[in-house]
Length: 358
Image (cartoon, rainbow, N blue to C red; front, side, top):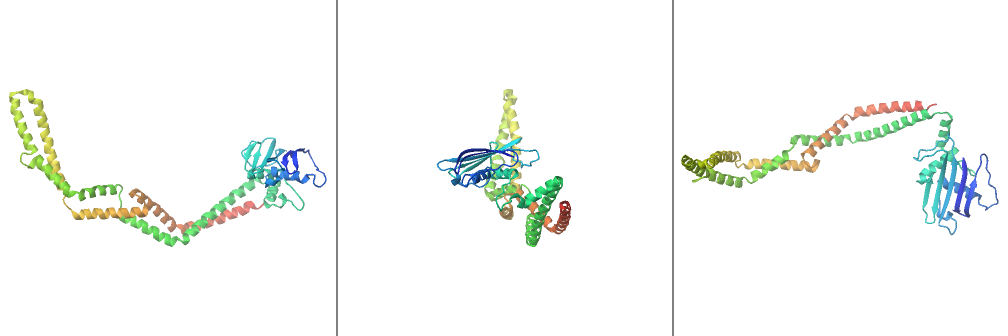
C-alpha cells in the first residue's frame, strides 16, 4: 500500500509530504486547493508522461517520491533490483525538459518505472476504469484467481512454438515459390564449379609453372652456359679440377702434407659432376612448348573467372560450392519438409487449443 508521497516544486506545491494509513484515505478541500495536483504527482511517480511547465514557477527542478509497503502476494515484474518489504519510486523533472526515474535509488528507464507502477496502483477517475478494461489485466486476474500459473506457462510455451513454426513455414513457403529459379541457378553454379575440377594449391602451382614457361628462353641460355662452363667447353670446370687432382696426387707422392688439400679436391669433383647431371636433367625437362603455356594461361583464366563469381581462392570457391549444394538439396526436398511442418503445426495448434481450454 502507499504509505507516503513527497512532492517538491510541482505546480503550486512548494514542498509537501502526505502520509497515508490503512483503509480509505480522503483528501478534501475547495476547488484550486491542489487535490488534483497530488493525484497528478502520484501519476508522475508511477511513470506518467511529464511536461516541463508542470514545474513550479521560478524553480529549475521538481521531484516526486512515493513509498509503498509491499505484501508477499503482490506480483512485481523482475527488474533486477533488490526489493524486500518496501519500494520507493522517485521521479525528477528539469526545466530543460529532461526527466529521470529511480526505483530504490537505482536509475531506471521510464518504461520500467511505468511497468512497476501499473503493478502497484490503479488510478480511477470519472468515466475511467483503467485496469479492468484492459484485456491483459482481465486475463491476469482470472488466471491468478484460478491458480492457473502452470497452465499459463504451458500455454505461453506452446504459443511461442506455434508462432515460431508459423514463421518458419512462411519462410519455407516463400522459398518454394521462388524455388524453380533458385534451383536452376544453384544447379548451374554447382555444375560449373564441379566441371572445373579444382584442386587445393593448384593455382599456386600453375602460377609457378607459368613463370618458368614464360621465361624458358632465358632459362635455356643460362642452363647451356652453366653446363658448358662446368663440363662441355674446353678447359671446363671438370677438366680443370681433374688436372688439379692429378697434380695433387703427384705432389702427395712426394709430400704427404698436401693430403688435406687432395681430399678437398677429391670431394669437390664428384659434387661438380653431380651438378652437371642435374643441369642436364633440368635442360631435358623443359622444352619450348607454346601449347603448354597456352593451356596454363587458360586454366588460370578459368580460376580467375570463378574467383570473381564465387570467392577469392580455390578454398573459398569450393566452400561456396558445398554451401550451394546443401541449399540445392534442401530446396529439392522442401516438398516433404513443407508437408511435415504443416502437419507439425496442426498438432501444436491443437495442443495449444487444448491447453488454453479450462
